[in-house]
Each structure stands twice: as C-alpha cells, then as structure tokens.
Image 1 (cartoon, rainbow, N blue to C red):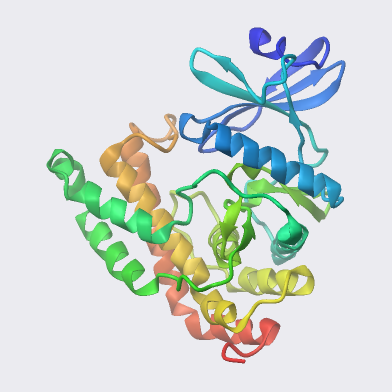
Image 2: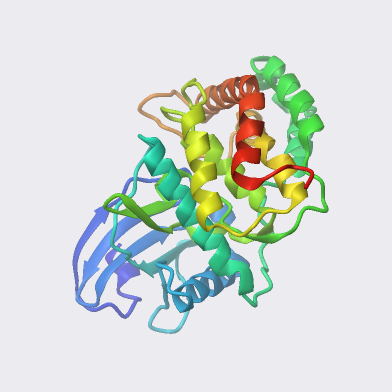
Length: 340
C-alpha cells in the first residue's frame, strides 16, 4: 500500500484504513498532508483507459456545475492510475459526508431521488463522448449472455439448481425490453443508496461514477427503485415498499428533468425490469463463477451466494408486479398522463 501511495503527490501519509468494500472495487480511506483521499483497487473488468477518461470528464463537469463529486488525483508522473502487479489503483479526493447501506425511511428515498435528479440535470449539457461500453443495463445483452451460458455443456451441473429461475427470468424480461427510441441522457449507472452521499438528512451528491454513460434515465430510476424499495441485502427475500417508491417519484419530479410521454409510459415497470436484469446477471454468474465478489463469511462459494442473490431479486420482481396498478397511478400523479 505504501508503495502505491508514494506515487501520488499527497505528501506524508498519516493514516490508511479499509472502507466497507462493495461488489466491485476494494476501497481505502487515506489521510495525508495533502488532505483526505479515497484509494481504490479497481476491479479488472472496470480498469480500462476509456472508463478512466469518462470518470475524469464526469467529475470535472460536476465540479464545474457546483455539484459535489470526487476529483481524480493523477500520479507524480501524470498518470490517471498507479499500476502494480497488473492491478490499477486510483486515487480521488474525499468528499465529506456519510453513506447508508440501506434506506430506512421514505424521506431518505426522496432525498436520494433529489440527488439523482440534480445529477441528471447537471449532466444535460456535458460535451463528452463516452468511450467505454458498459455491460450495465444492457438488458437485452444480459439476457442473451444468460441464455448462452445456460446452453454451455460445462455449466450443466450448476444450471440444474437454477433452471426454473433462469426460465422465469427469461420469460419475463423478454416481454419487458425497453424501446430503443427512448431519449438517451447521461446516467449514473449504479445509483444504489450506498452511492448517495448524505450530509445530515440531506443527500448532496453521488459517488462511484465509473459507470456513467448515455442511456435512458429509466435505468437509473429503475435501479433506485430496485435498491431503495426493499429491506435487507441483495441475497435476502424482502417485500417491495410502495411508500418508498412514491417518495422516489416525489423527489425526482421536484428536481429532475421533465420526462416525455414514452418515458412516463415505461417508468412504472422500470424497477421490475432492472430487478430482473440483475437477477439475470447473478444467475449467469452462478454458471460462469467469475464476476461478482461474494461473502466468504456467509456462503461457501461464489456460486452459492449468487444463487441466493438471483432468487431474492426474482422474488422482489414478482412482489413488485402485485402493485402495478398502484405504481402506474403514482406515475400519473407525479409526472402526468402516460399518453399525453
């Protein structure tokens, strides 16, 4: 760790401590003479020059618009990352605040939606061509890759334990794919609540800006619904929280860009779509056993953890479907008629 940090112009390091690790990057908090920073060991599938270039452009644009966001710290030699034994290490400025592992109240969900809305508004005029091609929220692609993995003979034994789940996810997602003519805007790509920065009760910005790209804002709103409108971890089965869903709509409608008729028409199913998409990714990793980090304290291996995750997401999606009439009525309440 000291060898990595010496490559950055931050002065003498006084403290390094491990932060709670997400599914992808390893993260450490660093205090040094030059200030407070966040050091990340980038996941090998998210360590590319294109992703780094996009991260730099997004964070600089947000800073120019007065939106709180981390800023990339280059190495002493001007590189965006330090490389060590084939792994990339990225340093960024630390933004004061706190994060939550889960939404506790509708008020937190509304605040998170306001932060997401301000992010979407701030990014409307960015003059940047996104170079990276993220697999996130390529729903059709994720479904295709799940089918391809399920057809491979070497995964037959792993598939046997989740064949019913694969069939159900395939059947539902096939009917729910978003139309390609939806407006494309800059999206965050992974707005789980732990990526929302709070200062007290107010959400002030978004973190983990590696996955920004151009897409429909419905993928961000759908992912927020999936992540914020339930309790527990992603591997636990929990019911959909309708009052939090309404809070998300209320917060986003107050500060976000206006949504067109086609966006409004598909908003009510966006949460279920993204939930099923994530289920497809977890089920695929049950077969391929290579992508998501897993909790060694609670599960014997990655496949077992991903099996629990896939089943929990499918349970949540099916619970959302029970509330579809109420969900659609709320979309109309906050955004107007779907066909207007």
